[in-house]
Length: 535
Image 1 (spheres, rainbow, N blue to C red):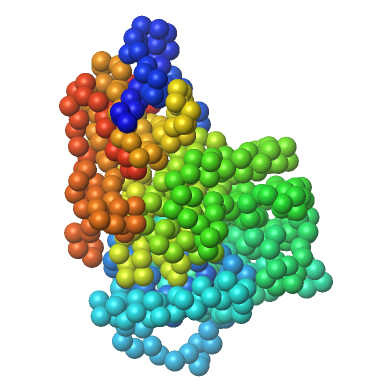
Image 2: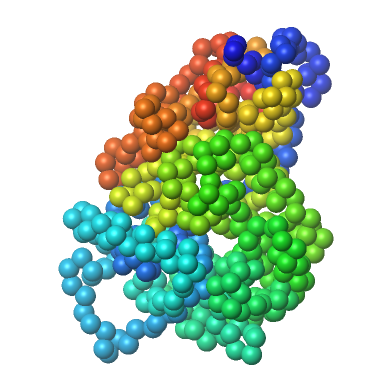
């Protein structure tokens, strides 16, 4: 079948009337951006990452002292680092008894080097990744069987966690255990010990309380009403304000699961009515599919991708009525719940869900998106268990470098209904910190879900400076199942353990069509767009 023609037309106020578009063929897709004004502005920390609290069960927390992992995390700064998940509701802080605390020697001795802890040697890093590989299946089995046990977090572990975030340019959000109850209300005594320690260390960090309270009955045989949870947050807010260092700390919640059942919306309403006023932002979670049953077709299905918009609208419908002044975050999200989909969530194909989620979330008003997870025991990580960056990591890195905070409106009109939704296009002002930024430049990113190449013709004759960042599978034989990725035909990989590659684009010939190959995604920086919204 012939390639589709994608015509991207710029609407520059009254000047739009003078722009002559080529006649659209029956199979064409006409894309029209509005350069005159931005839809909204998202947080500079829009793309953020998480660590699952189950990492404490793997004896691999010292991997956060890996020079390689710190280098990879720095590439995604600025951002938030959320430490939470289901395991957070089973964590107990255990203060050290300094009189009986054994002296740590060798690599376990975590000394301060500047603002960071000393890094572990390479041989120790390999040993710890081996441990993680052995213990990860056990962690996933426990999660699947809902077999949760309490686990302690020591002062040393808190230090490692905070140092990793701080040295990586990320702001730590720590999830507190909400299942500690006394007469139905939250028992804050253990949390107070942790707050005292962090305040003593002058840690600049933010807080959550509880993870997916809608599932407390399933995992702990406890039911909490939204109004009670709101009161618990008020209690935590007041507790934070007894410490000078936490007077301006962020407080995020309620981290509910995605809306679907009426009970989740009821919980959110009750929570916001009693506790909404103390929140820094409203948080909720989203996954497209079940990791145990997901298929390749799910990852390429426009209807599956579109389902996110329905969930976002449900959340905003509640938030706009009860707490209209509060930002809304996707506080935990990835492709598939249950630890991700094996052989899918860590492959090139996962990038379609991830990039579309970033584009649609920003367009519909989500202020921050926190990706589950940077690394750990699951299949939806950005970095694998050997600390090798996966396709979604490289996608996130390039997004960070090219995409700014101002969101532009762009619409696509499909004449061929059979291809409706297979081309997905989003546009922002270019990140002004990018080395290729020019005043008024825009960054368009597009996903081609179809098995046909698509040609993008930028209609305006003034568009003569377009730079392409085309992402395709790094292993052509494995295709969508590849765990590596090519940028403009070159394999992306770290230079060494402390150096990321320089991300460079391909300058397109003026007036030439942009070819977006089948089953690929790309970024295009239009340096001479001269968009009024991006001046």
